[in-house]
Length: 195
Image (cartoon, rainbow, N blue to C red; front, side, top):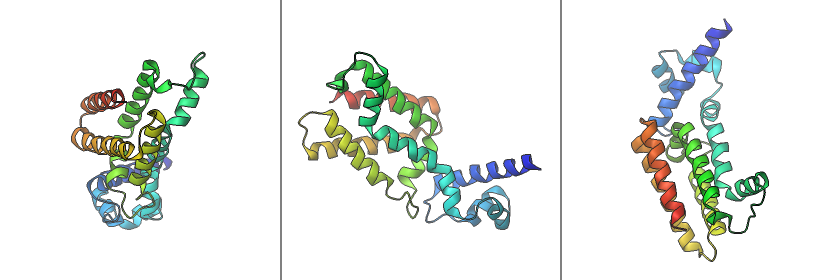
């Protein structure tokens, strides 16, 4: 009996992910999820008390990963601590560090592509609806830390470019993991090279 419950819950989560990928959170309903799953709405509510809890289960891990990767300073500190003889001074110019950071970013994007697309583009009306602004602000701050003497306006341009390009790549390549990984990696290599 437990296995059936887990299978039903997984099916609901999979169907809901597709619904939230196709339409914004504030337009989607539990009825849409039920229809996609070929279940009754009542059956959906047996597993999820409301749409917010269902959405949260789908995107929460991705959200936490986004926050980790955008907070580059924390990533730098962990990297420096793990690598003997590497200092924080000029770390952003270190090719090994950049390669490690890019690999980390690309891996997270690839593992969470659908959820990331949902968060960046279809979370309006949810508690995550300001994620794009949060990501923008954190990206701008991180860019200002990475590039000595960059003014705020230029940092904003870099941050906007990164987020817009990532959204475009996700939308275009989400069905092809290899292409998604390749294009994301290429973008971030060129992006970091401009610093």
